[in-house]
Length: 115
Length: 115
Image (cartoon, rainbow over all chains, first blue to last red; front, side, top):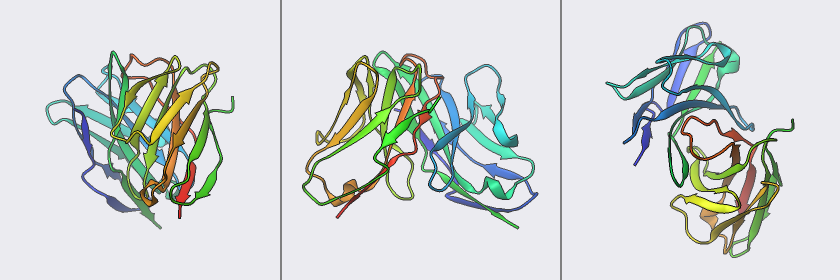
């Protein structure tokens, strides 16, 4: 069975400083991994995804994530936080069987950006 | 392209009642997945529909049922509502079910309140 751990339920940074949101996963297969963002009263939006092509993945709005198989991690980073980055972030592990695609969400990390 | 649409936006029901939520997938998508997101938690997988059949199911009781129509739209039905069913219900669409790297596109959700 797959699972996702997001090590911090809440991260607070100052505007212009780096962001690090941590994600560790457990999967029996070679998984695909995603980061989604959810702004208040809005739907989930894909930031980036890892599909075994390149271990460093670039996403939208300046976000990046690095897949480290040895550490079973997929941490999300951004060099400089912006006020508009304040939101809930979810790490997702995905695999597919003959029954269908299985998407498992982590519990989420709430990012606060201070002026 | 309107993306994934859900109706209604909000719904208030009382315990014991039944509710039906609706979802139209993104154009070109043939797979619909439903998730329950309780306040402050990550989305939990309910079930996935493909070719008008339920392909996978999460750990939810039989009170939760669904349907997919020939035009790929879908309904989620919940019978005998409990207070604990109060949540944001998210619909996601994707193309096919046999690739772990397929992105799921999410609708804005239906906020269900059970009194």
